[in-house]
Image 1 (cartoon, rainbow, N blue to C red):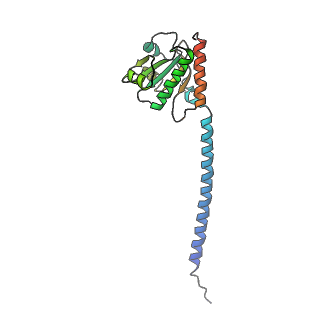
Image 2 (cartoon, one colour):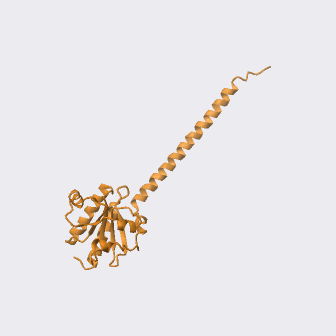
Image 3 (cartoon, rainbow, N blue to C red):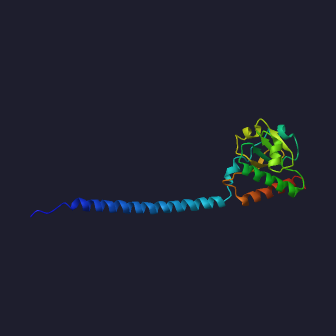
Length: 194
């Protein structure tokens, strides 16, 4: 008696297909779990202040700042922006500068534009009435190895960077910015300003 084996390839194909589809199904579930874990980790990272973004700036001395704004005693808070920076970030920086100055009752923050074409355009665009110093040769950013701008720096009297905040629209945390703003205000008050 001879057996009909024509159905063997069909059974083999069915078996292989079900194995492949179950493997793909398991793989999709694993991918979804990994994706969910990645999303959760990213969400947690956004909630944690990203101090490591600016720690590398702390302790550096800005030797070139005196050649830009002069040898002033009140240069403890400096805002630096560049013509090519994200406009939303620059605007947020100017709003922060204004908040600090309003809290102190004077134009305390020194604003420096590096590589800007027209200072009055920036004053008009960001509704800033204070003085903007020009760093035409981009000396500060060169000295800081082209650190991202805009940034707000807290300096001591020897031009040593004590703390920094980088305005970045993709990672800016409002709570961290508020804490840094209050730190700027208390720093200005501690050096004998209102």
